[in-house]
Length: 225
Image (cartoon, rainbow, N blue to C red; front, side, top):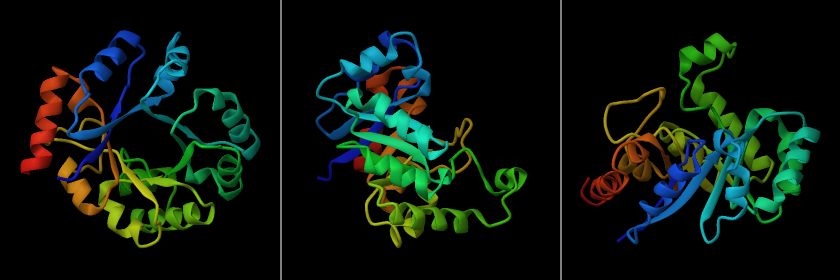
């Protein structure tokens, strides 16, 4: 039976809650990693906690988006955390992407395409005049050119991206039901994996409520969906 890969989003400032998430998501049926964003890393004891976390797959979802020198300085500042994965916005440009990749060491650099909280209307409001799919395809080409290790995109674009980008694809915007919260482009876990995702990122559907029950629900969905 296929062993699905899941990043559980630890979107909190509370170490007690993160410990609860980790202890209740250990399951031999799936491969689990833990995603930490700016919320936790910038909390009072968050950085120290991550630095002491052992034998876990760590995904630092920092979504770097700045000039090359600032991105490079950030990479150097967090090297001691020895993260397995780190995100950088593809929109930061080829020079910044190359700088991050060149200095990332063993940390896999993951390029972020269009956020799953955005849709075509959102992009028009920002000022983009191209279709969403066209932008993501172009970003996949840039990620390939920069030799990034992975790419974050909506499950809706995975099939398009896989034609261009041949490494790991990570998909957020995953929902077990019709409650999208603040996401616009969503899919179920099984739909995302069938589309070709290597990893899915799932937060609130797992971390809100009884975590063990939610994990079991997820596994049942994957095995019986």
